[in-house]
Length: 364
Length: 251
Ligand SMILES: Nc1ncnc2c1ncn2[C@@H]1O[C@H](COP(=O)(O)OP(=O)(O)OP(=O)(O)O)[C@@H](O)[C@H]1O
Ligand SMILES: [Mg+2]
Image 1 (cartoon, rainbow over the protein chains, first blue to last red):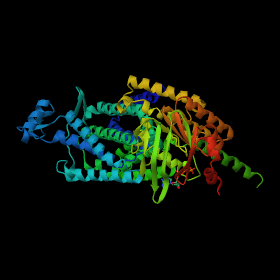
Image 2 (cartoon, rainbow over the protein chains, first blue to last red; image 1 turned 135 degrees about the horizontal axis):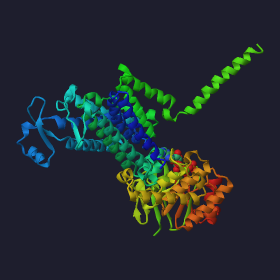
Image 3 (cartoon, rainbow over the protein chains, first blue to last red; image 1 turned 90 degrees about the vertical axis):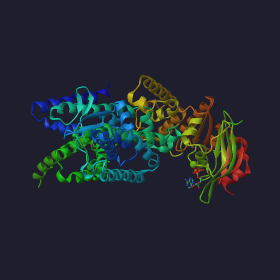
Image 4 (cartoon, rainbow over the protein chains, first blue to last red; image 1 turned 90 degrees about the horizontal axis):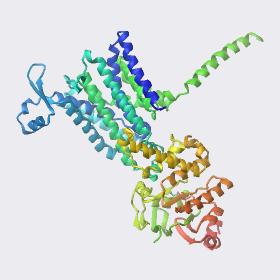
């Protein structure tokens, strides 16, 4: 019961914010709030890997990009030229293709968003699995460097390949019809609907991960962080759990990538950039590492500010700076700082100054 | 057939023979002690048995099966649990949660069942919690169930580690200096606890420096010196063994 309270509060806040934007005619905020929710989805997945299982990843923008790019490519690339091939006819028979017209009115055959989403997410999971087997044997700096290498490779691949649109990325990505009447798309008319889709997804993600942390698997992950040797002696297959949680977080990142790409109507190479991965790590750190709520809240706030352009052209620098400051002054995240203690201290200092000010007036 | 059979076990660290051609058996239901001066190779021996270290040569048979070369979690699954000389608790987890990790092998919820909190996994979770609470009570630390384990007093941390190992319901329990850092009263308590554990049907192999405790509770003692076994006998005979006296008292 006690654990349901924060979730209920979150739902209430989400609805309240939407209503306020309606009243104050500031609906444009919903766009960035929607995007922030998708980024936060990636961040809470990364939080479980970093904060709870104690493994670092500087490659999560790569998984986001795999999700987003595959979904974008499959739903936009025209298969008309191959329409008589056996493979295409078989796929059509399976119902995973749609035909329509592109913006110039030419015939278009492409993969349906549902099928593309499935392919994108499964691909991210498989790549995480294959990458994770050798890489998760490494610890600390070595793991950081290996995942960084993966991030760089992903970035260079999307930048260099024609299929992924090179420097331009992919645009004209169609809407993703989740249910009849409910589609992920950037249409102005669907702004509220998409705000709720994104936040609904984030809340579901929070429920799943919160359940996970407080379970047999969650304890196993936290025990690996606590002492890998003692965890193994207690029967925890540490290699397997590390791999599984890494794959799970890659799936969260890929789902975020797929949804955000359909929402934005496109994706560009910057989404897979190394600075994005650093940003996600910085946000998990600010949130307090082993603090799912902290990661989510910071994920939403910092991405929202960034998307609103508050950090201007210093965007990446700000996140680098945040990382340094957090590591130096609040290694357990800013939510864990003793805010009440600070407030009390400031209060005492203020009152003490007044008092001592009064005293010096006397004998001097 | 003995429960644990160690034959010609050998571990080299560079040029150092930390465990040198050691063989002995541990019978079902026994309390056996391994003693020896600092650096004799006692902890290394435990690390070889539990798979934390790979042996340079030799074999370890448990319940008649060769377990040498298996991974630590597989060896735990065979029924061997341990405590550590320098306590290894999981930070950021309560005493209760630490012990609940010890139930890992006795439960099976995976990622899906855990995330979806399926009804059967919730039941399983209740059982894990119940068993862990039982152990907290057995070790008289139930009052600290919800305290971060690493912030407990030394003796209580020992107790949590003990409970975590017992939570595996092992056939063999390895204790590396369970009385180190404890006062006389606590040491006597540990002695009684070890005897009780044996009465539960768990075989115990322990490393210990406290001679009165070792002499009192062990059925048999193995003495190591510079990696080699120099004696193996019942406590009374070990006390009178000239070689052992020489090692302990110097020449
Ligand atoms: N991982 C290691 N690498 C290199 N040398 C090691 C390693 N572990 C132990 N040693 C060495 O092996 C020898 C045996 O060490 P071990 O810890 O097994 O002794 P011990 O009998 O448990 O001693 P103590 O009573 O002090 O705990 C020591 O000389 C130690 O320095
Ligand atoms: Mg030792």
